[in-house]
Image (cartoon, rainbow, N blue to C red):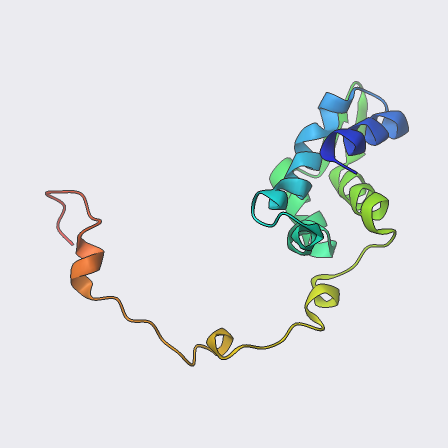
Length: 124
């Protein structure tokens, strides 16, 4: 399901127009910009993603005279896509651990490279 269809579904459930819900739906699916397959869902399609939506869009969305909890809108999106509401742990449970994840291989960048990105005339 794409963001527009989720927005239409939300409008049928709570009233208003799909445009009322589209920013929330597009945020949840914005991970498609980074990953072009279903793995994109590992970024926001989970319980922490629901709370992130609430933090970004507020506790409620006002549609007409109704106030709809943003968490319910986000949870519905995920339920429509997955059929259940996973946690981030569900996504990483089978993830292989690579050495770089523990900081075992530190990359060093010479200070001169960092100074190249500072604006002229700014003391560091």
